[in-house]
Length: 169
Picture 1: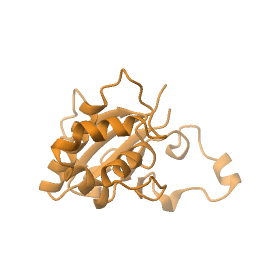
Picture 2: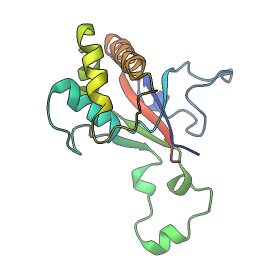
Picture 3: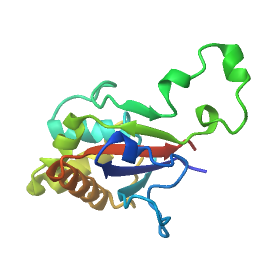
């Protein structure tokens, strides 16, 4: 199974972490579920591949701290601290299996939201050749970049942040 990454916007952390085990992109949402505005991806992790997209947009070299996320789930304060605590975790613990929910920084949202439409093709092309890119020539990277930009613009206009819900693959 490959890693799934759902990027979405939410008005606050409580909404962003609503039922953390539920998919964010759902074709049949639950009656009490928030309606998430989602971009579904595989292998576009927030710190690596998405970080390299932000680097391309900003015209700066990629660095591990370019997109510094905040882990919302599973909670950092409950994370096992020792090897014995890790080994004692049940097999289905979110610390072992996921999902994880990360809050992206305002700077990443704004870099995406403020990207000039005229630069979209050039940014998409450059992103495909970045070392952290997992794309090949058959992928429609331009459409994915457009989806990220559109989501970020809606988030910024609404005063919301971007989040990433993901399951390790």
